[in-house]
Image 1 (cartoon, rainbow, N blue to C red):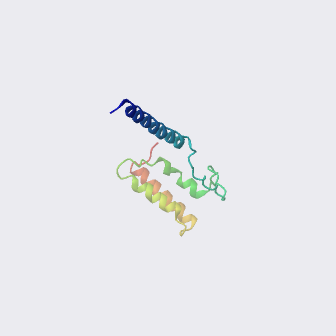
Image 2: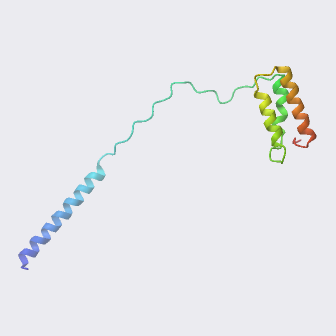
Length: 114
């Protein structure tokens, strides 16, 4: 191969590499399309901490935070207490009596922390 042909071939290779490099640089510099931010909710956010109405039912239910749920057999008292507390079908006096009975059983079984 003659010297002129080798020079022409080298020039073509350099031109091709420059073209590829420029196209890569242009695509890297192009802005990336981003998704639109989600719409803001229109409903008001609830207050994270609301005061609890203290009545006879919540007073009777206070022992619930002292139940040792990790101790075998004590989880039952926690579940029964929760079920009785949220049951809307029984009247308040019966609910208080039931919650107090469950608390007394939990205390007798050694399932309440001091």
